[in-house]
Each structure stands twice: as C-alpha cells, then as structure tokens.
Length: 121
Image (tube, rainbow, N blue to C red; front, side):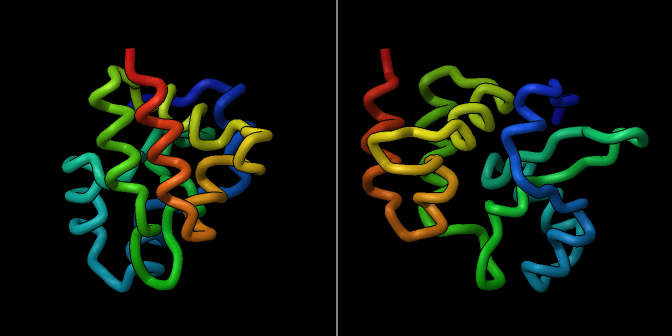
C-alpha cells in the first residue's frame, strides 16, 4: 500500500475508495482491507488526502474479477511491486487486444495468465 506515481495513476480509468469497494462487493470495509493484505486486491494511496483506493476494474458483479487473484499471485512471484503490477495490468497490449485488466473483466483470464507467466525470468 504505497503512493502511486502520476504515470501509473493516469493508466487506471477509475478508482474506488475502500468503503466504495466494500459496497460494490457487499462486504464490510474490514474485509476489503483483508483482501488487500492477502494480495487479492491492490490498494494504493492517491489523491490530495492520500486515501487508499483500488482500481474499479478489479470489481465486477459483486465480487473480485475472476482471474485477478491468480494473475496478481503470478506477477508477485515474478518479483513485481504493486505499482509494476498496476502498470502491467493497465497498459494496452495489442496482442490481447486491450489491457490485461479489461481482458480479465471479459473472462479472458487464461490469456492474461499466459502473458504473466511469460514475464517470469
């Protein structure tokens, strides 16, 4: 949970505060904090008040987007920081097409995980 740099911040189309994320997930804020702590969601401090926020694209249909947790695990195992994971997930990939985050929302997690595995050195 670190502050985000402007370049990565600009890549993410929309953000949710932890209370807003909790509302979308239908859980308590403490549960969202636990998901962040467990590495199932990425939260960063941003904005004037440095409020913890998660990318809105990580939540859909009342739950964490399918395939996100596995993808985050792969990237973390590859040595990616939270900021690097966000940058990778929200940078357009012409071979997908679109961003890996969008592909996960469109239930194309297998393709995203394949690309994440290919990043391993």
